[in-house]
Image (cartoon, rainbow, N blue to C red; front, side, top):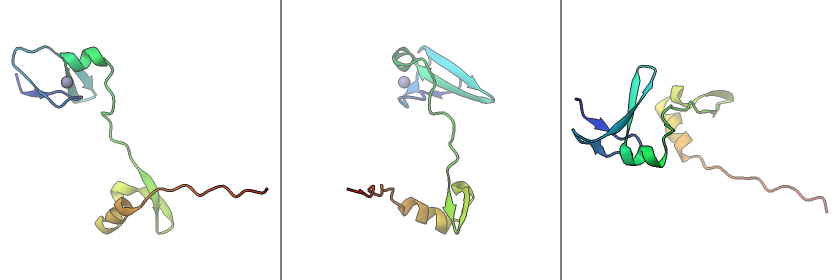
Length: 86
Ligand SMILES: [Zn+2]
């Protein structure tokens, strides 16, 4: 048996330990028994493609050059306060 790592807690699963396999396409994810009992649903296993605006165009951040990706990492989100009419 190849060595498996629990998707949720990151613990290495021992030779005689029980685990739950999740096959997603060609990928295999496993959960240890304890994590499976806490939450039997596999979550957060897909990469999310993030789009943002760069030099006027909305493009996937993964396709930006390294300099622009670093600049994206430095960006901060903020909320503009609503203007009040009263
Ligand atoms: Zn686990």
